[in-house]
Structures are given as structure tokens and as C-alpha cells.
Amino acid sequence: MKYMNGLKRIKKIGVLTSGGDSPGMNATIRAVVRTADNFGINVVGIRRGYNGLLNGDIIELNSRSVADIMHRGGTFLYTARCMEFLEEKNRLQAVKNAQKYGIEGLVIIGGDGSFRGAEKLNELGIPTVGIPGTIDNDIAATDYSIGFDTACNIGLEAVDRLRDTTQSHEKCSLIEVMGRNAGYLALQVGIAAGATAVLIPEKNYNITRDVCYKISEGQKRGKTHHIIIVSEGCKDNIQAIADQIELETKISTRVTVLGHIQRGGPPTVLDRVMATRMGYHAIELLSKDIGGRLVGLQKNEIIDIDINEGLEKQKFIDENLYEICNVVAR
Ligand code: ADP
Ligand code: F6P
Image (cartoon, rainbow, N blue to C red; front, side, top):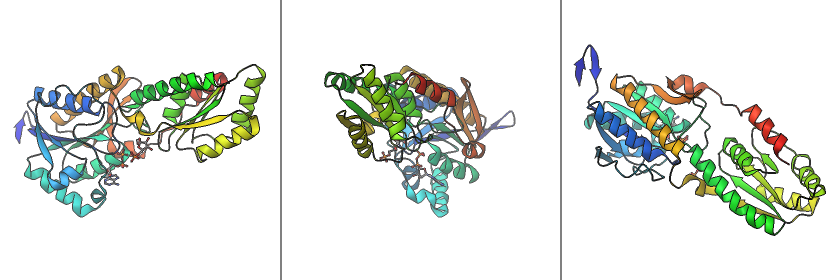
């Protein structure tokens, strides 16, 4: 480790992807590696999330090894959940392994769970920076997480296709989108798809009042097909909702669960640019030996905040957006 102008200069860092993958993770790794190269910092890739730190699944990366990955969804470093990492003794082993490889700083790309691990590593003495990568966009510290825009667009494309057949057969399509316990993805897709109703876990709903009544009112106005978006975090079983709609409105109703298709595919422009900006910022921090931070976007500016502070924050649904959605959805 070199010291320049009184600052410790980090010579080697590791990067890993953890938790659910999201389109744009590859673009983030690329930005991390190339920016680090610019600062004269070597990078190793740690594979399969925190598992790679525990079992030494670590590879050298350079500017060439991250060529041609910008446009690919998923993560070429693989990602995984790692239950062993919840135990202190395993995290201590991970730190020893990191030291063995000469790793002096870490970039963790993932969601809240991954950041809890990042915070623990930082406490154990390895400067660690988190970058938000999840299609759920449920990380409170940031307005945006990498992969969200791509997942919204994939979801929208699927709904547009379903609309064609739903319209032709004059049916109702109930479409479940991902998002874990958060409704951001569903709300965004619902607005963009022109849904008749959008159900999200953050808001109480009543199927008769908020869905069937809207369908019946639409039928009176001559509307013959309906798109209803349901977030996977909603408490009700989606087939049970479909059965109730059929019973109360007499419209033939079909269920489609989009599932993991929303996590794949080439990242959008927004995700590639966001990945590049956030990856760059993470290395700016580590190059100054600053760890314990989460990179994020606030009011369109790339920012960083203390990991603990970030993890304590709570994210709320955009009330104004929800209101707009309900006004135009009919
Ligand atoms: P995400 O990062 O997408 O929220 P998870 O919640 O599954 O995904 O967390 C990913 C991984 O982060 C876990 O498998 C585990 O390795 C690590 N992790 C999660 N919570 C903790 C914690 N409290 N302490 C240490 N590591 C954690
Ligand atoms: O967090 C991303 C996400 O795709 C959620 O939207 C979804 O609930 C979950 O991961 C699915 O996890 P798994 O891939 O483990 O089934």
C-alpha cells in the first residue's frame, strides 16, 4: 500500500455482484474496472457473490476482460445468495482471504441485503462501497437502482403483447410483475401500459371497489378489454383475484405471471449510463481510501451516503405518481 500526499493509496480492489441479478450489473463492473485502471488500481472479480470471498473464487480483471459486456444482461461474475456470510466467523475468514489476495477495498453491487454484508466488511477494516443493483428499485438511499428501467421496459413490452390478444378476444388480463415487497415496478409498468387498475402492496385495495367497479364502468362506456397490473408483493393470490373479477363482472379473465423474464435482456440506455456513473463514483471514493459508503442518485445527482444511514432509511411510494395513476387508469 502506497502513501501519497498523506493519503493511503489503494493498489488493489475486488468487485462482486450479490443477491438477485439486474440488467446493468455488467456495465457497472466494466465502469469499475476501467475507472480503477485509470487511477492505477488493479481489480479482481469475486465470483458468485460473497461465496467467492469465502472460497477464493477470484479472477484477475483488466480493461480487456470487461470488453463486450456492456450490452449483456445478468452478471458475468455470477451472483448468488450466501447464507454462510450471515455468520461472523465466516466473515472473518472472508477478510483473511481478501488480505491473502491483497484486496484493499471492495465494490459490492446488489441490494439492501448485500449492503448489510458490505457494512460488516467495512467494519472489519476493508473499505467497502455499495452500488445499488436491483430491478425492485426498493433501496431507500437512492432514487434509482441499476436495472429498474430495463425491467420496466421488459414488463411493458410483455404487457403490450398481451394487450393485443386481450383486445382481440375482449378479455381481461391480470398481469403479475416482480418487485418483491415493493410496488415501484408495478406502478411504473401500470402507468406506461395504460392499465385499468394497478394493485401494489403499499396501498390497501378492495377488489370489488378498485377493480371490478372500474371494469363495469368501462364496460358501460363501451370498453371491451382490460389490463390489470398486480405487484407480486400484494397479499392476495392472483388467481383468486381473477376468479373474483370473472364472478363479479362476467368478463373472461386470464392470469400471466411475468416472473424472471423481467430480470433479463440488454440494459437500456438509462441503465448503462447510470451503471457507468455509479461505477465511476465508487472508484473515486475508494481511490481516496473512503469506504463505508453507498453510491446513489438523488435529485438526478450521483451522491454517496453512509451505509448505516442508508440502510436505516425507509422508502415510500411516490404518492403523486400513485394519484396520477388512479386518475388516468379506467
Ligand atoms: P439483495 O442484496 O438483493 O437484497 P439478499 O437480501 O438475498 O439480496 O442478500 C444477498 C446476500 O447478502 C445474502 O445472501 C448474504 O450473503 C448477504 N447478506 C444479507 N444480509 C446480511 C447480513 N445481515 N449480514 C451479512 N451479510 C448479509
Ligand atoms: O429482488 C429482485 C427479485 O427479482 C424480486 O423482484 C423477486 O421477488 C426476487 O428477486 C425473486 O428472487 P429469486 O430469483 O430468488 O426467485
